Length: 112
Length: 115
Image 1: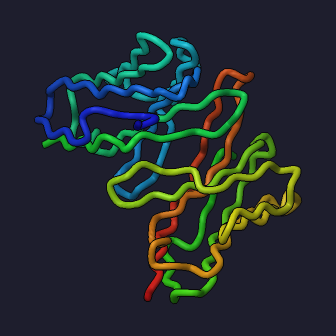
Image 2: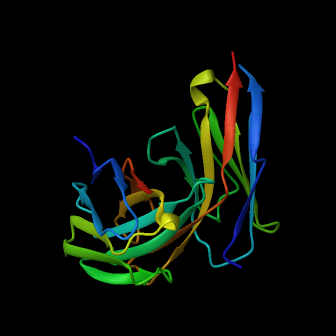
């Protein structure tokens, strides 16, 4: 039973399109995250939600809008996709104050 | 101040050898230091972690050494195996009032263990 699951695993789309990535966790955690891994494999936090409330927004362009319908789900909607948005996006969850974060398998987004 | 520097960028080790990856940080507010292992096409998986009040933690073949005064920590993989070949990331965590934690990652080390 997958702990943190993301869909889709792969996403290829054209510039200017709008796309969404979905994430669900069954760990009972209160906090969920989106991390971005670029082509050099560098991992950087984008957003963090605690119990549906946005806590961290790491100066991500407004085209990226996370939404958390409940504490087990965190979706990422991206408007007007650009070539530079191509990356692997990882969802993660944790149960603060315990700092251990558990990651999903990632969504590889390719913008052409 | 929120950077974590990791070296080497890549590492080749013979089977049975010791793999050593080093990381350094500046921000003394970091309170948790995990290492993640990532295989191609997979998400980062938590391998081992340490708190700054402990100088060493060992789990099986994996050991973290932590030097608080030098603001450095390292991962040692003893008896390295081909199955350990992966990218390893160190990270440092900072808490946000108990609501969330932010992980700052190092740049990663690609480890290849040769049979």
